[in-house]
Length: 579
Image 1 (cartoon, helix red, strand yellow):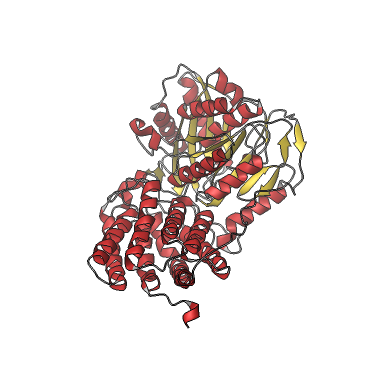
Image 2 (spheres, one colour):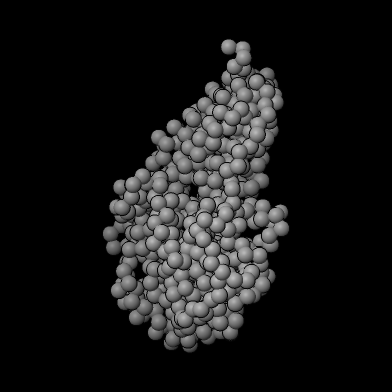
């Protein structure tokens, strides 16, 4: 378990700061992550990796010549926000465009996608390359739904080396996607990992068993099986990966035997003693194989096998030199233009000017109270929500909701002090929630609050009808981003019934307070009913069977919050001048 920490909520931030200090010759910390200490002497494509913390040396550990130009660093196992991705890209961009590359997880796709749109709007060519190497997470017919795990490393390396060689943006993207299409990974876990401050791992296994098909965000394997000998395990891993050999004539493989955090190098070498001969017997030449920790999962005990079928083009970049804090290969001699640590960075905290009516400011005070109630409620419920999420996910939902709601309240308090109306206050809260919580739920809650604020505006005091329409705006924005529907076992299973119930009751003349309370009861019932569903979206989808019997944590937390904030949102505001 993780034993060295201060406040567990600060663990990822403190780890990043320590890493950047220890490797200050190669990296420098910027808002949202880290970038190379030295910029290229001439413009080159900036390859930006990213995702949650807890996977070291992925992702910040591979920043440097021949590899990544920067890494966007989220909280543990949590997608970084779009603001973080934007800030790192701005710091790393040298004039030839940016490519984000990351594992195929809903939160990452949303946040990096939104950052890309923002960069493109500013005239910076930006692309995205998703990694989908995990053969256990979806069938070959639905390969686009697969997760990215240790195959990330190969795809990132190919792209980074190609960019270093001066290849243009379109070619870097093409090479990354080709590497991904030719990469396959299978992993197994022997024990779960433990968050800083937690006294129990995210999952446990019966004595003498392992979980085959693990995820790198603390997810358990897709099914448990008896723990085999090293020879039997090697045979199983090789058999499963070779069963998915892509349509390729290549007999040359990049191979990674990866440790997940607690499995020692000596154990991996014992496993390699079976893996390597089996691959050679199958007719393959192993090209610069790697055995060690490259994409970890905190302190998880486990291992994964990654194969990439190489052609001449991919092999050139797989074997190219690299110089990073955690990974070095070959003789590196790159031309760089040095910059100081005080280089100007993106100012994401510029103050806004607010123009609002007294009535809207009075309602904004109630919105602030609602956000304060939310932050306290979620802080008290963190462990319950985390345990619920760990059944078939990565266990980070509680922590992400705590971080997001606390940041939202703080930002709303600042906006209130500066005279924001209800709309601007909720928009500021939403932006802060998305920025600090990260992950899928973070970006969705943030976008929903912003949409609610945009509908309320800073001029009118909301009538019950306006309140219902603002909730509908909240729901519609989240539905548009998440693409989930009722029955997918997501937060939408509680949100859509709430919005519909509120609209129906208010349109029939029921008062806002009573309508909200009834709608919250409907949402609570709907959230509980998700226990009977199999997830069709998000990280829990590959572990659908394990989630049966457990309500969806996103739907549960939404119902809890909407129940608690009703009295604040439905009370009639009294402008300060009337007191």
